[in-house]
Length: 220
Image 1 (tube, helix red, strand yellow):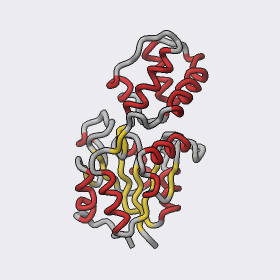
Image 2 (cartoon, helix red, strand yellow):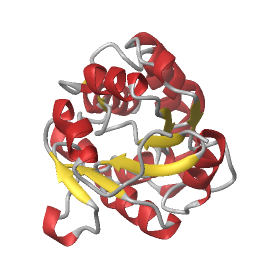
Image 3 (tube, helix red, strand yellow):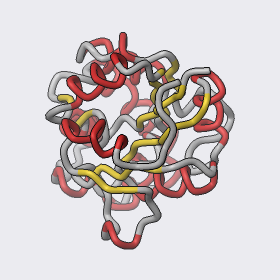
């Protein structure tokens, strides 16, 4: 059975913060609230849009009773323009091409809902690389619960490694009992040294070589 490699989306494959930031500020504008800076929104990314909206409400002083309405606004704005400003990180496409050429089966496991995830992958020309996409609404639980990652690997075959950028990803891999490659240029808040990982990398063009330098299984 082929080996599987699973990737997180936001902050790992794709720098999606600019579009998330734009949607969040469009949501706030509908309530006449001043925009938040990009770095603040980046600090809220990682546990799905409902959690991000909750943190925005706390930051701006809006009552928790507004959560459902604001979440609907955020989803509407983001779904309308999920990939206008987002881009794959440098080296991502070449990395995915190399892994596919070596026979790996590839997947995505993200806390972003499945529909906008597919919109982004389609818009950026990435969807054809992936054999399975698990979104935040695919199961009844999200990362760091290991169930979504387990589901991705069940679809792909033997787990090889999970690739992510954040505390949530590190915890998910740990709970799932699978190796973890930490991309150090995503949306992580914790120092690299404090996160559990198999290895850390900073350049996607080097990821296939990093994987070969470990004792992890080959593609088949």
